[in-house]
Length: 580
Image (cartoon, rainbow, N blue to C red; front, top):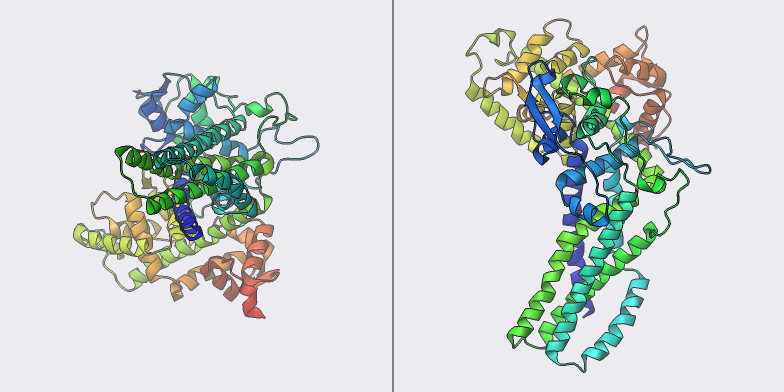
């Protein structure tokens, strides 16, 4: 029986892994959702679809559209109302973004007289989704780990139950198993409701007018916060205000609109969480539920192997008992994972070490963005020097590069892009989303033009940008959509990994940092020089990134070291081992 129990535990662990991936995907979508825009994925469209807002055509309004309020948004006044409303996808999204907003931009009550709540150093270089993903590991461990206490408690409960079942008829044994299985589901449901209410107590309130909520969330999505850090165009919209529709009277009424304090702190900053279980208590209960669920399933397998099912009643009870298991794994467990991870990751449960780690990784990704852009410009320069048809400025004549050729190039680029690691694909998407200022699924051509200017194209930067778009423009609309964008980077990154052109381009950036042609630059000069790209990294950020790559303090670096560092993407691998 012990081997069957271990097999069931392994199966549950595998199922939890699949469920946790779905939870991560949900959080990723939440963090990327932008406030304003005409795409279905933005909050504005979701609110209009849910009936909170109405789009009305108005030629005099920005974007030719006015947003009118149709009904108020509320979390719910009672537990029953909140339980029902939380089933709606939009409510889940709004509450998650409200928690994230408070995490990144704490309100004035964020601390107490004795302890200051930890704050994120730089929200533009922080991914709340990645932070929760890291913390999710602790929650998953609590679900799949079996400690001595769980074994001991299981023995205390199983021994008397086994003794009772030995004297009962077979159909009553099945009835008892079915009842215990669904009792576990009821306990999990109760824990879910308690966790949801506990999390609600820590959720800031949003304005009832969803137009004001959109204004609060405008410019705070992951890609919009990151826009100010991306290299390239200096005059891009950072908050997206210029692309909002008309908000009618919400602009004037919402000048001072802000989120209200979470219910738990509404009475004051020193309010205590009386009556709510501690986070560790939640973890222990979750661990016990998962273990007892495995014991219940094991008992069902043993029952089937020990005695055949003869009557329809036996079959019905047995199947009913089995039906509880997938309900627990794929309906209740995802909610428990989401809520418990949130509850144990915010307010006084913030993890300082994880926050520092995520912030440093985000700064490292800026170096990788710089490398990719250098690879892209080097890809175009290499093609032009080798007289590629699409890269020739003379190719501006109609028909020089056909749509069939562009389609073949696009398909090849997509194939190479799909072979890239998932993490790199996500970072390339973040670059595209940062360039998609209108949130209409098209990157601004001006971003590419400014990128070529940044890489030292004194003339012909517009033609160079047009040639890159032409390469994958299989429909002839000259719009750089996400499909064309990832195809373009798939081609550039595969052909220009560490070529001479890439090293030459990085050398030009190093020259911008060096004073009077010096062979070495200090971290202060490097930080100041990267601002010209622009990449906004403080001297401390640069020093930390160099130390993480070279494994030792680097007060200054040479051109060769700079090129090596950027090509490697500022990797966190223990580079110091190579120098020992």
